[in-house]
Length: 436
Image (cartoon, rainbow, N blue to C red; front, side):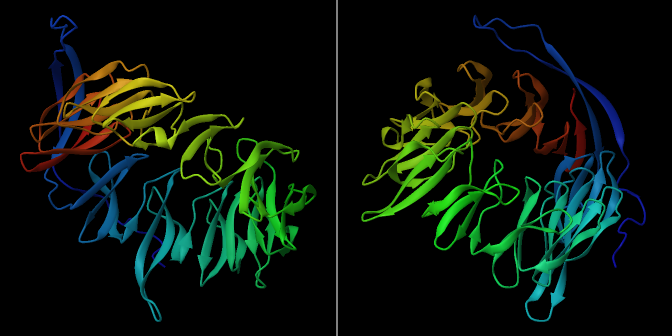
């Protein structure tokens, strides 16, 4: 059954390898030119206009497509997995999730998913309604509305028998049986926690919140009750705390408890999100303002103090005030003043944030220092230390020091990954290999 896609290797075009050296000059604070920075990249060029789409390289392969048919090329531009798929994903750990469209009698055309190796062989055949990502070595698969688990070798280690199934965490998976009740199984399919619960969450930090007889409680991976079934509402533990809801005459009020059941943050909120990297979003009862709090309950920032505020990424959150953007830290102090027109939604990535000032794009570090000057009409996110930049509708590439790796003279550059990128120049597509 469609077991092997790769039948031959096609050279797309004559590949010419040229060694190019680029010199870029930068000016210091006094306007004096620094010594030229000489950077090399390898430029592989060919006539690739037959491809309508090209994706990023992952593990040395990139998906390409034409007429809604997809395959994969290698970094030499060779088509190593033919154009026969309708859906493809990047490779990870030597495998990728793919699909073809098949005709279903009741539902029309539906995707049939499988997993392919980087040699073109199928690890899982194209026959599943759904395949999850691998978690703790196993992936949830669904066939005709029932779920099971497959391993990385393509073995169906737990048959499709559950109407609902979740990823493994802490060695156990939350599944639902044919009676609509939840329990937990291990990686052999053995029932570890019986199917006695009408609602449940997967394990997190060694505990799982379960619902029985109208109340939530928490059990460990052996099924022992650690926190009694006395909570009206409960969420999984994160950062050592779990949001708990208590019903009262004025509605549900939320607070946070620790693993001993002690109240760490009082039940003062009518909305409470999970902690992520030590920060949670909450809203006090009777108020409309959302707050960022840390695990002690201390308020870091109030949404009402800003026109707009992004979630914390690492130690910083982007905020907009008085029409301009800056950054606050986890103490709530604006450590980078609001002087930017716009801040990329990703915030700081590897210590660099792409920002816009006076309608030009550049990049700053976590102290607010300019690492890429504000000279670009467009500047995309850095990937593997490189970013595509645009001046006057021409594309080039810069590195995290602001050095020009490729001049702004290409019609298109994109899909950077693993040090490779795709360029369009004089109506020809090519692959570039960036230095490093």
